[in-house]
Length: 244
Image 1 (cartoon, rainbow, N blue to C red):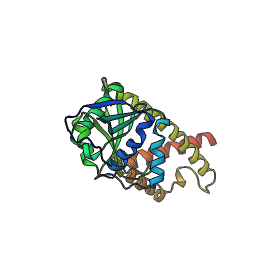
Image 2: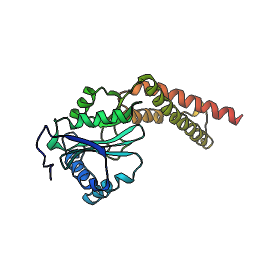
Image 3: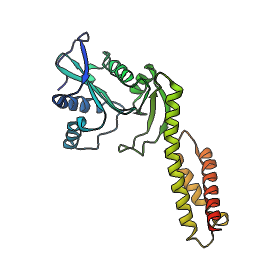
Image 4: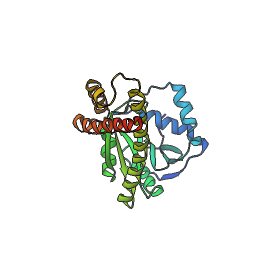
């Protein structure tokens, strides 16, 4: 059922959610997530209900926007990631979304990131109007819905510091992945008839590049090919040094 308060001038209250709000939060989510640009919900009605009923048990903060007696929007912040922000479509274009995004800025003055579906142009334009920056686009395959997405961020009071924190986080992930790549390369080389540079499988390397390019289309196949050439070459060199 949509919120009963139709008055665009009605007072809006932003407050931390309590257990009694979760039913209304569920209704907002169901209505808003069915909108244009949102991927089809692949969970059952029961699964969605169970998910919303546990939002207060998740790490982070759940806040609601209430007009009169009705919850008409909500957000969930986990660290510096805004993983949920929804407004009931019956109260769209009445400042609720703006109030929620301003709340997130106040709660996270050092910046926060979020994910938005590429097809949801309305939401992307909204975030841009509110000063968020688009950082990257992917094919969405690392998420359950598998929908092409954009990663956006509000850079906070010190944009350079926020971006450097994000770079440090990514570099830590890259370091772990490089270590795994080197280890797997070594394991393969030890089982090949011809190892090292002479045993490189160029067809397979091209398949790797094409597969990665589909996941990160903005980087492009040529750049990925150059990156992966270096990764493979240096991984083989590390294996050869260890073998010696």
